[in-house]
Amino acid sequence: MGGVRAQDSPFRPYWWGTDLAAAGVDARPNVGTYGQYQFAELPPVPFELRGDLGWLATQPVHEEWSINGNATVQLPELLTACERVRLLLPPSFTRFMASSQLQDRVRSNTACFIDLDSAPVAAPAGGGHLVRFLSDQQGCLYWYLYLTEGGGDHAVVCSPDFYGVEADVPPPADPDGISFCAESFEAFLCRFWLENEVWFAVTAGTPLPDVGAEYVERYRSAG
Image (cartoon, rainbow, N blue to C red):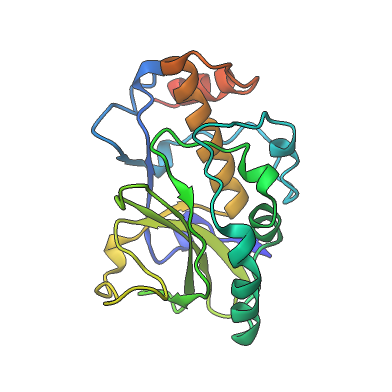
Protein backbone atom coordinates (compact mmCIF):
# COMPACT_ATOMS: atom_id res chain seq x y z
CA MET A 1 0.00 0.00 0.00
CA GLY A 2 1.59 3.22 -1.17
CA GLY A 3 1.79 6.67 0.33
CA VAL A 4 0.55 10.01 -0.95
CA ARG A 5 2.99 12.76 -1.90
CA ALA A 6 2.36 16.25 -0.54
CA GLN A 7 1.92 17.70 -4.03
CA ASP A 8 -0.76 15.11 -4.82
CA SER A 9 -2.76 15.61 -1.64
CA PRO A 10 -6.12 17.46 -1.61
CA PHE A 11 -5.00 19.11 1.64
CA ARG A 12 -2.44 21.85 2.24
CA PRO A 13 0.88 20.53 3.60
CA TYR A 14 1.77 21.70 7.11
CA TRP A 15 3.33 19.98 10.10
CA TRP A 16 1.58 20.51 13.43
CA GLY A 17 4.13 19.94 16.16
CA THR A 18 5.89 21.03 19.30
CA ASP A 19 8.56 23.71 19.23
CA LEU A 20 12.23 22.81 18.91
CA ALA A 21 13.61 26.21 19.84
CA ALA A 22 15.52 24.82 22.82
CA ALA A 23 17.29 22.46 20.42
CA GLY A 24 18.46 25.41 18.35
CA VAL A 25 16.08 24.94 15.42
CA ASP A 26 15.14 28.49 14.41
CA ALA A 27 12.43 27.23 12.07
CA ARG A 28 10.54 25.84 15.08
CA PRO A 29 9.91 28.73 17.48
CA ASN A 30 7.65 28.36 20.50
CA VAL A 31 4.28 29.74 19.40
CA GLY A 32 2.11 27.94 21.95
CA THR A 33 1.18 24.35 22.63
CA TYR A 34 1.44 23.54 18.93
CA GLY A 35 2.83 25.35 15.94
CA GLN A 36 1.85 24.92 12.31
CA TYR A 37 5.20 24.69 10.55
CA GLN A 38 6.15 24.57 6.89
CA PHE A 39 6.09 21.00 5.62
CA ALA A 40 8.63 21.79 2.89
CA GLU A 41 11.22 22.75 5.54
CA LEU A 42 11.08 19.41 7.36
CA PRO A 43 14.26 17.34 7.02
CA PRO A 44 13.97 13.69 6.02
CA VAL A 45 13.70 11.26 8.91
CA PRO A 46 17.03 9.50 9.58
CA PHE A 47 15.76 5.94 9.10
CA GLU A 48 14.98 3.72 6.16
CA LEU A 49 11.26 3.15 6.44
CA ARG A 50 10.38 -0.37 5.34
CA GLY A 51 6.89 -0.68 6.77
CA ASP A 52 7.90 -3.06 9.57
CA LEU A 53 8.58 -0.40 12.25
CA GLY A 54 11.92 -2.05 12.92
CA TRP A 55 13.45 1.30 13.90
CA LEU A 56 10.87 1.66 16.70
CA ALA A 57 11.10 -1.86 18.10
CA THR A 58 14.60 -1.18 19.43
CA GLN A 59 13.71 2.05 21.26
CA PRO A 60 13.16 2.27 25.04
CA VAL A 61 9.76 1.71 26.63
CA HIS A 62 8.44 4.72 28.56
CA GLU A 63 6.37 4.48 31.71
CA GLU A 64 5.37 8.16 31.53
CA TRP A 65 3.92 10.19 28.67
CA SER A 66 3.32 7.13 26.50
CA ILE A 67 0.63 7.56 23.85
CA ASN A 68 -0.72 4.04 24.54
CA GLY A 69 -4.51 4.13 24.40
CA ASN A 70 -7.49 2.10 23.25
CA ALA A 71 -6.06 0.71 20.03
CA THR A 72 -5.71 -2.98 20.86
CA VAL A 73 -9.36 -3.10 21.95
CA GLN A 74 -10.76 -0.97 19.13
CA LEU A 75 -8.73 -2.36 16.22
CA PRO A 76 -10.86 -5.47 15.49
CA GLU A 77 -14.00 -3.33 15.13
CA LEU A 78 -12.17 -0.90 12.84
CA LEU A 79 -10.84 -3.72 10.67
CA THR A 80 -14.34 -5.15 10.31
CA ALA A 81 -15.75 -1.74 9.38
CA CYS A 82 -13.01 -1.18 6.79
CA GLU A 83 -13.56 -4.62 5.29
CA ARG A 84 -17.26 -3.83 4.97
CA VAL A 85 -16.49 -0.87 2.69
CA ARG A 86 -13.49 -2.57 1.03
CA LEU A 87 -10.82 -0.34 2.51
CA LEU A 88 -7.39 -1.63 3.43
CA LEU A 89 -5.39 -0.21 6.31
CA PRO A 90 -1.62 0.06 5.80
CA PRO A 91 0.26 -2.85 7.41
CA SER A 92 2.45 -0.50 9.48
CA PHE A 93 -0.70 1.06 10.93
CA THR A 94 -2.31 -2.22 11.94
CA ARG A 95 1.01 -3.54 13.29
CA PHE A 96 1.41 -0.51 15.53
CA MET A 97 -2.20 -0.42 16.70
CA ALA A 98 -2.09 -4.11 17.60
CA SER A 99 1.00 -3.73 19.81
CA SER A 100 0.93 -2.06 23.21
CA GLN A 101 4.69 -2.62 23.39
CA LEU A 102 5.28 -0.47 20.31
CA GLN A 103 2.87 2.19 21.53
CA ASP A 104 4.74 2.40 24.85
CA ARG A 105 7.86 3.39 22.93
CA VAL A 106 6.25 6.60 21.66
CA ARG A 107 5.62 9.49 24.02
CA SER A 108 4.14 12.94 23.69
CA ASN A 109 5.11 16.07 25.60
CA THR A 110 1.55 17.39 25.12
CA ALA A 111 -0.05 14.18 26.44
CA CYS A 112 -1.46 13.02 23.11
CA PHE A 113 -2.96 9.54 23.23
CA ILE A 114 -4.07 6.82 20.83
CA ASP A 115 -7.78 7.38 20.18
CA LEU A 116 -8.64 4.89 17.48
CA ASP A 117 -12.00 5.33 15.80
CA SER A 118 -14.24 2.32 15.21
CA ALA A 119 -14.90 3.03 11.52
CA PRO A 120 -13.72 5.29 8.67
CA VAL A 121 -15.72 8.41 7.84
CA ALA A 122 -15.92 10.36 4.60
CA ALA A 123 -13.20 12.98 4.10
CA PRO A 124 -14.36 16.52 3.21
CA ALA A 125 -12.19 16.52 0.08
CA GLY A 126 -10.47 14.09 -2.24
CA GLY A 127 -13.18 11.44 -2.19
CA GLY A 128 -11.41 9.36 0.44
CA HIS A 129 -11.91 8.45 4.09
CA LEU A 130 -10.51 9.50 7.46
CA VAL A 131 -9.69 7.26 10.42
CA ARG A 132 -8.92 9.14 13.63
CA PHE A 133 -6.06 7.54 15.56
CA LEU A 134 -4.42 10.19 17.77
CA SER A 135 -5.90 12.96 19.90
CA ASP A 136 -4.48 15.81 21.91
CA GLN A 137 -5.42 15.52 25.58
CA GLN A 138 -7.20 18.89 25.52
CA GLY A 139 -8.84 18.36 22.13
CA CYS A 140 -6.63 20.95 20.43
CA LEU A 141 -5.73 18.69 17.50
CA TYR A 142 -6.61 15.32 16.02
CA TRP A 143 -4.58 13.18 13.64
CA TYR A 144 -6.16 10.98 10.99
CA LEU A 145 -5.19 8.29 8.55
CA TYR A 146 -6.36 9.51 5.14
CA LEU A 147 -7.31 6.62 2.86
CA THR A 148 -7.67 7.61 -0.77
CA GLU A 149 -10.74 6.73 -2.76
CA GLY A 150 -10.51 3.02 -3.41
CA GLY A 151 -8.07 2.63 -0.51
CA GLY A 152 -4.94 2.10 -2.60
CA ASP A 153 -2.89 4.88 -0.98
CA HIS A 154 -2.76 6.66 2.33
CA ALA A 155 -1.31 9.64 4.17
CA VAL A 156 -1.61 11.25 7.60
CA VAL A 157 -3.48 14.50 8.08
CA CYS A 158 -4.15 16.72 11.08
CA SER A 159 -7.01 19.03 12.01
CA PRO A 160 -8.41 20.95 14.98
CA ASP A 161 -11.81 19.58 13.87
CA PHE A 162 -13.16 16.29 15.22
CA TYR A 163 -14.11 13.75 12.57
CA GLY A 164 -15.44 10.38 13.60
CA VAL A 165 -18.41 8.14 14.14
CA GLU A 166 -18.95 9.67 17.61
CA ALA A 167 -19.26 13.23 16.29
CA ASP A 168 -22.68 14.63 17.28
CA VAL A 169 -22.47 17.20 14.52
CA PRO A 170 -19.99 16.61 11.68
CA PRO A 171 -17.53 19.47 11.11
CA PRO A 172 -18.18 21.73 8.13
CA ALA A 173 -16.85 20.36 4.86
CA ASP A 174 -13.76 22.59 4.94
CA PRO A 175 -10.69 20.95 3.38
CA ASP A 176 -8.61 24.01 4.36
CA GLY A 177 -9.10 23.01 7.99
CA ILE A 178 -7.13 19.80 7.38
CA SER A 179 -3.37 19.71 6.93
CA PHE A 180 -1.38 17.04 5.11
CA CYS A 181 1.46 16.16 7.47
CA ALA A 182 3.04 12.89 6.31
CA GLU A 183 3.20 10.79 3.18
CA SER A 184 2.65 7.59 5.15
CA PHE A 185 1.74 6.45 8.64
CA GLU A 186 5.25 5.19 9.32
CA ALA A 187 6.76 8.51 8.21
CA PHE A 188 4.41 10.39 10.55
CA LEU A 189 5.09 8.07 13.48
CA CYS A 190 8.85 8.28 13.03
CA ARG A 191 8.91 12.08 12.94
CA PHE A 192 6.41 12.39 15.82
CA TRP A 193 8.45 9.99 17.96
CA LEU A 194 11.77 11.62 17.16
CA GLU A 195 10.71 15.23 17.64
CA ASN A 196 9.19 14.41 21.01
CA GLU A 197 12.36 12.59 22.04
CA VAL A 198 14.42 15.65 21.06
CA TRP A 199 12.08 17.88 23.07
CA PHE A 200 12.32 15.67 26.16
CA ALA A 201 16.11 15.49 25.82
CA VAL A 202 16.66 19.25 25.72
CA THR A 203 13.99 20.20 28.28
CA ALA A 204 13.92 17.25 30.70
CA GLY A 205 17.42 15.81 30.26
CA THR A 206 16.36 12.37 29.05
CA PRO A 207 18.74 10.50 26.72
CA LEU A 208 18.81 11.74 23.14
CA PRO A 209 18.35 8.98 20.56
CA ASP A 210 21.41 8.23 18.45
CA VAL A 211 19.74 9.83 15.42
CA GLY A 212 18.48 12.87 17.35
CA ALA A 213 21.54 15.06 16.81
CA GLU A 214 21.58 14.14 13.12
CA TYR A 215 17.94 15.14 12.73
CA VAL A 216 18.44 18.47 14.50
CA GLU A 217 21.51 19.25 12.38
CA ARG A 218 19.58 18.44 9.20
CA TYR A 219 16.87 20.85 10.32
CA ARG A 220 19.35 23.60 11.12
CA SER A 221 21.13 23.13 7.77
CA ALA A 222 17.85 23.22 5.87
CA GLY A 223 17.08 26.60 7.38
